[in-house]
Each structure stands twice: as C-alpha cells, then as structure tokens.
Image (cartoon, rainbow, N blue to C red; front, side):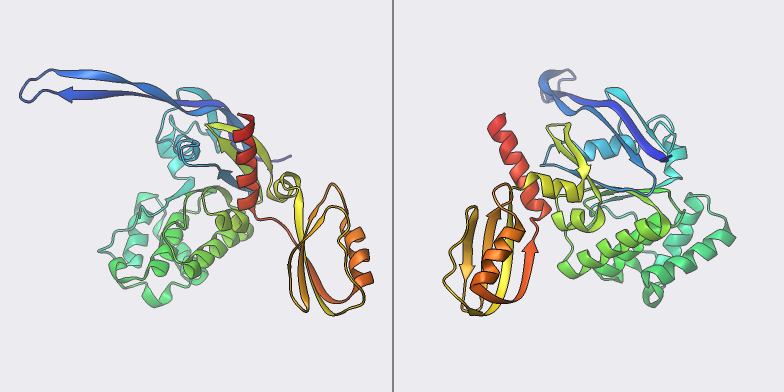
Length: 330
C-alpha cells in the first residue's frame, strides 16, 4: 500500500484585506475595505512517499500559497491538510524537523560564516547530535562536492557553490520531503542543470519526496514525474507528466535525414512540411488523422532515409495549449 505523505481536502485560502489611510498627526485612521482574494479554492490532492510532483500554473494561480500552508507558515481559511501526519499550521515546529524548504533566492545561510560553520549552526537548530552531524556533513561534502570551499566564507562563494551549500544545508537533518519554490530562479544555464541533477539524485537515491513549484519548464521536466496544474486557485489537472504531454497536444513533429530522393514526395493527409533542405526535412502531423507507421511508409517510398526522430512537445507547449483552451472556454 502506498505511503501517503501529503493529503489535502478542500484546502482554501482567502486573503481579506483592508487599507489604512492615516491623517497626519491624528491618531485615528480610516480603513478602506479591499475586495477579498480567493487564492486557493477547495484544493484536494495526495502525494505518496518518494514521488516528485510539480505544481504548475500562471502567476497568481495559488502555487506559493499552497506551499506556505503545507509548511505551516500560513493558516488556511478552511479545509484540512496533513504532511507526514502533522497538521502543518498546528504542528509547525515538529514538522520543521522532518522537512526541507528552499524558496528561490531567499538564502538561509549566514554569509559571514563558512559552509562548515553554517552546517554546525543548523545542526544545532535541528537537534542533530554531534556524532550524527559529523557523519552527515561528511556525506554531504562528498555528495555535493563541497570539499574545496568548506572553509571559505559564504559571501566569497560563487552562485553555483552557494546553491550547492543551500541544498546541502536543507538536507543536513535528513528531511523526509523537500518543498521547492522556484529553486533555480536567477541562475545561469550551467548552474540550473547542476541543481536539477542534484535534486533528481536526492529524490532517486534517498527516496525523498519532492513538491516543486516553478515557472521553469526545464525544472519541471527534469525533476518531476507528476504534475498538478493549477488555475485561479483550483487544480484543473492531476496527471503523470508524460501522459499530460501525450494527451494534450494533438500534433507531433518528425525529423528525417536522407541520402537521396527516389521520387517526388507528396505529404499524406494530416501531414505538413515545416522545413526542408537538400538532405533533411521536418514534418508536423495530426496524430488523430494519421499514424507514424503510415508516414514512414510514404517517406521510405520517396527517400533513402539515414536517420529519423519523433519530437515530443515540451511541457511548456502543453501548458500554453491548456491555458489557451481554458481562456476560450471561460
């Protein structure tokens, strides 16, 4: 039986706001009520141990609000949630010892201290015994390749080195799950790849459950196996990432390379030529109208093919397609 580590039921968050206007030295102020905002609307889902799940949606969809309720720093308006059998906003201290959290560019490290000193400090905060801390730090140094700069002040580290230390610090107390909110925002391409690879290894080698909120589709495709699509505070799709891509895009692309052309090629129904050169061609086809097998037969009759590949749509195009359809329907 699957071990459920997160379970929410009808989780809702409404922000009620007022705007205070002061009048100089007068002690009274006039409060103007601003319309309330429904940030999260009756959200229900569960996540099993060792899953890696992405929260996907446009700005203001409710992703960060959901994360903040699940780690206990926001109270919901209504509904229930349990994380590792704790109610987050009631058992925040106990839950903090079981989870790790990274929020974008908000560093948890003390910049004046070295990574080694930071690890010792956070070991004390998370009640990690000295013996266990020594062992854990040694393992983290090896895993994240930190040895060369463990005794340099954090402020002198490169961004990539600092992010590796951030991740290592988050794992120091051996959390059972990680909450990641835009973990690669602001990083260059090389560092992004490195951080994604490390997060994926953490999930696979340590069976650490991961809940990721990100706008970066490369983060989502690299790290997650399942997607929760959120729009206007509600979950509109909950599906494996691969199935989401396959089910929501009606067209595929096929690239071929060829030595020569045997006869004139006329595309069959549902196939369009996107691009063509002397020895290469790129096609687009409607999967509901024709199959790859039919296309290949027509191609091999016309060309001596040396290489071919079917290009799956990116998660970015899937999400764009889904939200454009929602806009038309809404």
